[in-house]
View 1 (tube, rainbow, N blue to C red):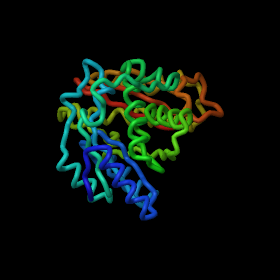
View 2: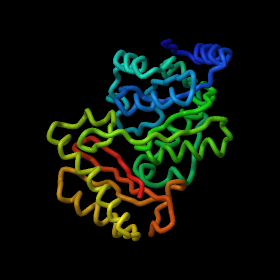
View 3: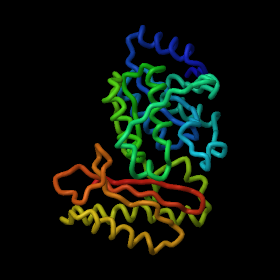
View 4: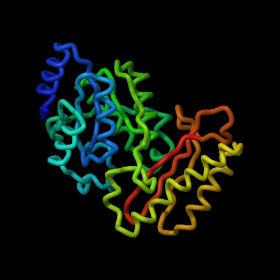
Length: 280
């Protein structure tokens, strides 16, 4: 497995793979890889002959009071994990190598980025869309794999690809969960031991809503109310939002009848913010 740090090196490696007749699979990450990330790499290996993984903690998607400087970095472990999962190349640029010092261009995907996390993290999805557009341009990937845990991010990327005609196929990979149901996340390691146990209520409340929907309840307010009532039984978990949204537009829906929807939630435990979702 090769590791490169500049775009010219990356493009040279991709060109060699294409000359060998390989299709290019891509998994963008910010490092601190866990089993969820590794499952994306393994999925990419099923879809393409040559798999590259980017490891880049993108500063433009962090707000002024967010955890960019504290975001966990574990490159040696990440490199070992990528190799074990079957990656062929890691692209790990420095910020200085990736962003021009006087860069002024940003990409905004309006509408789909406005609600949910976009409401509470202004500018976040502009940073995501910009860095992903840059990575798509740099990698020239044929297929890219994203996790469904980051539901709104997935919708933003799909709209980005559609609107700007990027020649890349987007695959959504199912959320990988811990034994107690908690969605795997790099931020889980921030949780204190007691908070980690309490976090298991998050997937439980989503499952309550899904079972109600499967029983025939279609009113979104009723479904969210059932979820948040259970969540309120664990006061350490502070709800930021619980919404039912259309999977494509991320718009709130009053009733789920005949629509492809998901219930999405964001919570805080201590200083750690967690998100999760389930299709209904």
